[in-house]
Length: 360
Ligand SMILES: C[S@@+](CC[C@H](N)C(=O)[O-])C[C@H]1O[C@@H](n2cnc3c(N)ncnc32)[C@H](O)[C@@H]1O
Image (cartoon, rainbow, N blue to C red; front, side):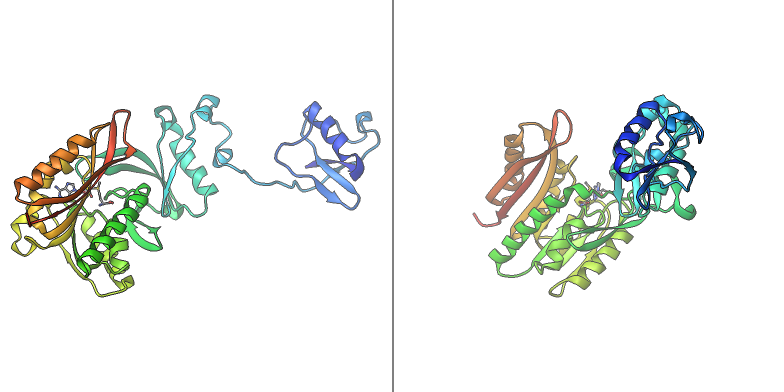
């Protein structure tokens, strides 16, 4: 690339002159050569010896490029301008899998986008288009657009609170955004274990890959964990993750895997009246599952749930939960319902923590 060689002291003067003529290459650096500075020239800049250079030399030197600072700079130059304007401004990275939502007009350049992202982000192995969450299992419909060295698997590992979980966003629900909720749940379990004076029996019938169990197991607040999910793809990941958690636990923990519908756990006699704590992590249906989970509760037990409902309906949910427990002959010791995060313009995710006993 041609460079204009000027003394260091007048670099700024020449930079502004070159810029004003459109003769300075954007994105190429200035090279130092002793007391001289070499300014990168565009193709349209006049040749060596032109009067405009006022006697300064024009030299051929290797371009000092900084490399693109954004993945979009790595797209092929023939991507139409209207599509460049519609490029996604955000994406999510889960382990080494990148998930991106694309506007419909971008379909024709989806693979170019994925290839540019792979080239720009060395820690990403697979780029997928995210078509949103579907069905009872709340799984994202993912389309693999490009993979490093031909990789196509969406199974990966994520870290949360220093613990590792195997996840597969194409097959099993997992949300990294609920870490704070999980920390709060662990604190509730720690408090209940302290109240009972022993580690707890913890049931998680809607466990997914098991992130609710990480802190309670590793911090020594669980003695027996029963976990499962209706989604059969969740079970091998859940098993693997629980093995990892048990290895990291401060005290010994027994683990039982029990898949299938959470409402059917009550049909398994050893589970009846056994749980000191039950997670009801089924936000779209929690309320309708509660009654079937109550028979699992021990004499003094907490239920931790999440429910998506209309804004400002905490009092309704509160009354509904109380009714279910009292109809089953339990006494409500404490009941907290709290809106934790907006889900849509009208819906809100509520957090529910209820402690109840069999005593009157
Ligand atoms: C919102 S996700 C929560 C998963 C996990 N607890 C977490 O925090 O990542 C709800 C889970 O419940 C499972 N599920 C849906 N219906 C179920 C049912 N009737 N019985 C058991 N699991 C169910 C889904 O497959 C999904 O993994």
